[in-house]
Image (tube, rainbow, N blue to C red; front, top):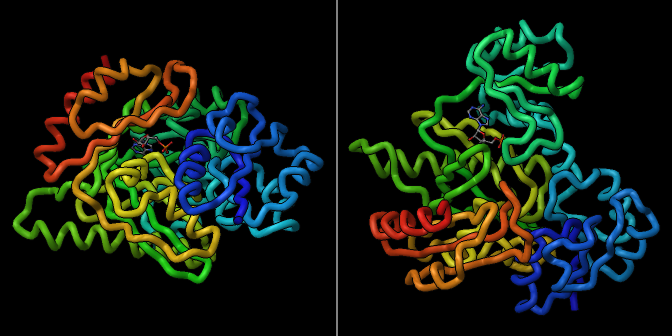
Length: 373
Ligand code: AMP
């Protein structure tokens, strides 16, 4: 029996365990929160990430450690490496935790990004704005997610105000990208270097939070070279993912988020873990991202990423409509995370699989109305 230790016991950890049980895996969680969503599913250690005694207890008897949260301190992961392998490799965390380091790493590998510049003090503001122009987006380098710690600014005055509100936290200024749409790719690399890629996903965010994913992403824009265009975008995303995974000697699921502008993909960020935009794979692909992550980190062969139709994933944010209202929609699959509803909090999602994008979008509209109340 293989026992997998997971740092973080949120919904991603919960869905990893749910995918691993049919393969005969066992799980153990580590999370500072006493009421984390995955804790009902397996044994768990409740302690801070810096608590070395607790980490030793956690590691005892584990075959492999993974994480579901990209802000786990790198020192925690490096400490655990003395007891058993940790995948994805800590280097992926190091690169992903700082937006500036991450974007420099993308550029080094030939991955296009929006224009950006570091902002460490007031003295950097003018030069940074010269690089990005206005409008621009100021983001904290660390600990930002779901649009937190981000400001869109239109002139130097606003930029100065936004930077001062960060109270000295190092930041990055990015060009505001007038994107056609946001796309993401999920890629998986096994311990032996085998790689598989899921089809590109189209993502719609509101207030910085993912609301809707559709996969495979519909073909756009409507040109006569529709198919070639779409395939080249998929190939470009795969090439970027491959470059990242090889450079990091990566094992597990990797997500990369892009802005699409014409035939260009500008990388916004990567997540060295299973990802919200991959939840569609639970019903929409031969093998889910969760099962493939479990397979990858335990050294098993990877599963097929072939889609089973077209799938919409609608996030439930802040509240859950009645079960009846969701479950009576034909083909709707509900996934709840056992989290208390709170404004802006992801408490579940709904997957809906259809044969065509037209069929899907009419149903997804019904779900979106239901979800948004
Ligand atoms: P992030 O936390 O970087 O994933 O940003 C959250 C969301 O804010 C993204 O998914 C975009 O919708 C939007 N956003 C972030 N950065 C930019 C940018 N440079 N230009 C335009 N929109 C952005």
